[in-house]
Length: 81
Image 1 (tube, rainbow, N blue to C red):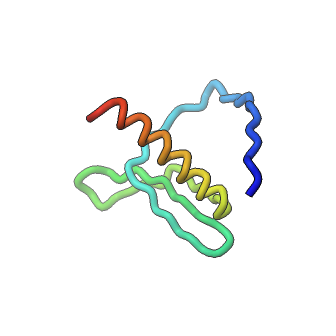
Image 2 (image 1 turned 30 degrees about the vertical axis):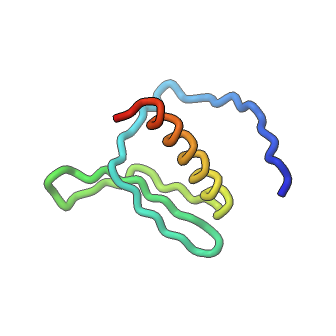
């Protein structure tokens, strides 16, 4: 496998863009894609609102998993909770 080349990206965030809080994610997988639906589940209810739906290729999902593992491991080994 060849090393992945990284490129610095300039990300433009619209002024009206606001972060959202999701407390649940549902993941569906098939041979061609990984679908992630980010939800906000209202406490003490059975009500949820879908906030975003993201479709990844299997390889992008694997890359995301590796990245999250590294970041979480680094953060929580330095900042014990």
